[in-house]
Image (cartoon, rainbow, N blue to C red; front, side):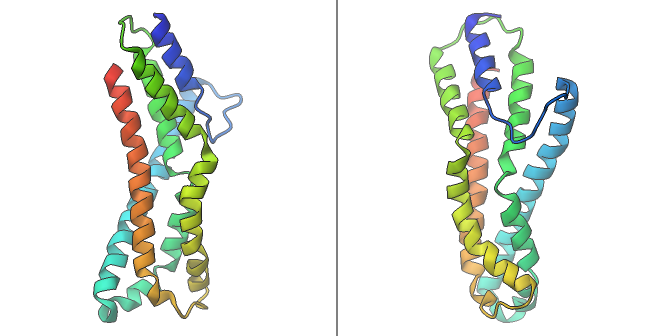
Length: 189
């Protein structure tokens, strides 16, 4: 393993996990990460997709679809709560697999790839930015959805455009971050 590969592995290990891995072996950690990644990322993407469809339909077919939108409060509530941590377990799993693939790599590559990789990992580690970018819009939807679950929100039928915009934003943000990381990882793999 040359210095560039060693540096890249160290950069990947600098990713701050959202889980506590004390006492877990790397095999057990990877097995748990596979489950968590499919749950966190998969469920949030599925729920966001459903929200996008439901809110789009209810914007254009208000009369006939209003009953289904009335019941969407719990789905909105769950999706917004899970969207805070959605990409991080999947990102951690991708980094773990990347470390395993490049561990015995002996080739030289452009130093810019590691610099870009370091920038991406540092951006992922700034979790407060994610909380602000995702949290503030999610809270705008979270509170009215919570009120709708308890049937005390008379204005819930006015929220489909806002839910659509925020769901699209969160969907794009999560997938954009993962896409940028995948592009960087593929440059070396």
